[in-house]
Image 1 (spheres, rainbow, N blue to C red):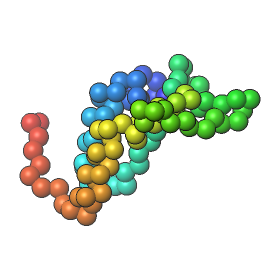
Image 2 (image 1 turned 135 degrees about the horizontal axis):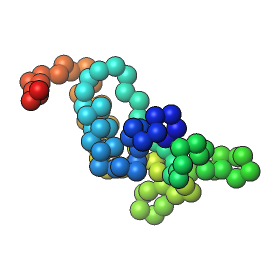
Image 3 (image 1 turned 90 degrees about the vertical axis):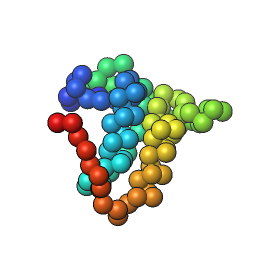
Image 4 (image 1 turned 90 degrees about the horizontal axis):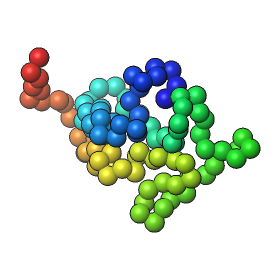
Amino acid sequence: HGAGGASVLTYKVSKLYKMATAFTMAHPYGYTRLMSSFFFDHGDQGPPNYNGNLNGVSINSDGTCGGGWVCEHRWRQVKNMVKFRNLVTGESLQNWWDNG
């Protein structure tokens, strides 16, 4: 959210977000940074807080985050791609194919 408006991919379109994250984690380019975020209703909204003090992240019984946090890094698909990335780090990309 923030700069970029509707063109920024966020947790709100979770299927596309997970696919984009999977591609990023699978592709050996640059330094991968995985972000986790918080629920928001408008683009200039800040993280969950009380009187300006950032709220801690609570973990629900099902392993998801509470307290206004999304915690995309806990999503099954994202966790699995982190494991994949860790296993293939240092390997070259082979048998690349595209239809373009």
